[in-house]
Image (cartoon, rainbow over all chains, first blue to last red; front, top):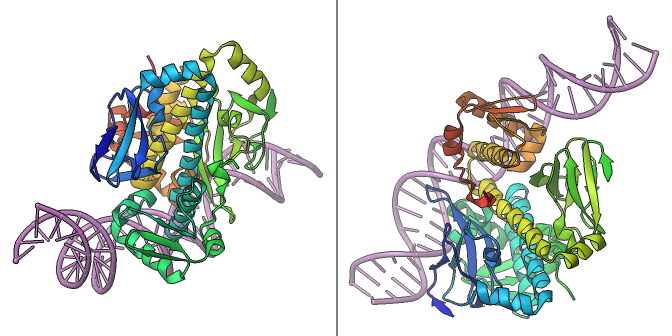
Length: 207
Length: 207
DNA sequence: CGCTCTCTTGATAGACTTCAATGTTAGTGG
DNA sequence: CCACTAACATTGAAGTCTATCAAGAGAGCG
């Protein structure tokens, strides 16, 4: 188990990890950088997620993993994981499925970055996070804690931080959400879903 | 085995396929649509690729698969695939790995859509396709056939078709590539890689 | 208290979309 | 062989979206 302060990398692009991490507490993201510092975040992870399962089969990490909040991460050595899979072969299928859902979310995010307007994209993101948190019992009554800065948000939706701020303000003005500090409250779930074009099929949640 | 004309869907979002497809001949893409018709393409596939392996574990398809050129596709029933995996358990790991590389390419494309300039993005795409085709012996001497229209290109990089045309023209003017009709020739591989910020680590090619 | 990080605002420049029109090419049927 | 059509590529102009630069306000922290 590793305890990390906010904004600290858990693993870096180019490394050859010998363990997968499980988020025990806190929020984690994965990102890539361009040479001049431009950053794209392509996933957010909450407790229970395994952000870098792929390192089990892809030796070199092609992206970085970073703690957004102070985080407790469980590190599972690849060797233990492989042993456990040998003992319980059904587990491999579950883990494989987990990485497939991960990829499904990537696809939806590509659609968001490439084809949704910035406002639709943020609305969609809020819907996605609420749906995920709700599914694991971490959110109810249409509100949740979203511990990312507007700079993080900008790097998620692929715009500048100044513009991200204006998008958030525009969304507030719609009245669909209240987003103050690190708290988000959805005022009109049906309206937000319609506005963001949200359909949770791609999350592949099971009953 | 199915034979498909160009522009025909092989599978559609929302379906529950009972087979995975292998591209035998032709080019295939995967995409998602928004309600108003905006389209995002998030992968291109060449012969030998298995574009929808994930359907083995995710029953409902969250995107569509489409033939770009006239295509021959091998359909492998999930049941046969599962049997084969039971007989040769090492196969599961290889297929899993394949889906992980797929996701790695998604990540790189997200970086491209979100953070690269359009010109860098197209240059990067050319590098990626050449690297992939070269790795499977489908391209040599820095040229290859790229059977996509500029409309497809626009839906890959997330811009309008008019703008995609202007980006291609700008790229031609750099002299790094010659792209006429369906033929692409890389005139300066090192220069194109530098311009597009291409580093093939994310393709996870093995010697 | 001073520092840093984040959020916010305004102004200006640049990137990109949209609309509209035209050129080009390949295929189709007479 | 030619007229006709459809798909694709290209161009220009106008307008919208987004980035960049610059500055200031507020909150948290040592």
